[in-house]
Amino acid sequence: MSGTEENKAVVLAYVEAFNRGDLVALRALLHEDAEIQGVLGKGLFEKVEPIWKQLIEGYGMQLRVEELVAEGNSVAARFIETGTFDRPAFGHQPTGRSYEIVAMEFFEIREGRIQRRWAARDVGSQARQLGLPPV
Image 1: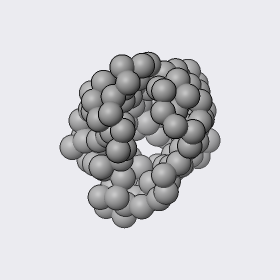
Image 2: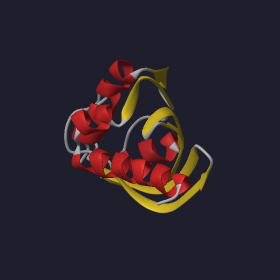
Image 3: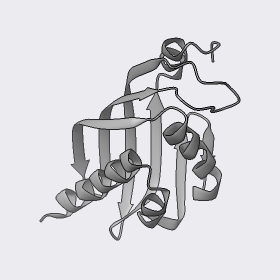
Image 4: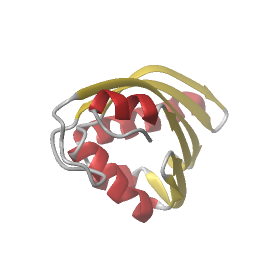
């Protein structure tokens, strides 16, 4: 397998772990000093773990890979992100409503693990579909 294919495999393992809600496996895919940037800020795993936990447990967030593009140590991913707001999350009570949005994440892979991850998603559309106040 080529280096770019190995890097794509790391991202696919990240998606599979996220979809299982396996935060231990997600942590294992990250370097100790991995920087994770998203809509709610940036930080190390310890900062984003509670955010990811609410997305997984509250929104039932799932990622479906639509496209992966790799060059060198970088991988770009385009997902269809779905979920249903069934449990309290982010200070809101569940609405029972579902959402579907396009999400993009960009990864820098080093030594077979994620060194950096950036994410972009339409949280405004997500909030509207879930019946939440505007972001």
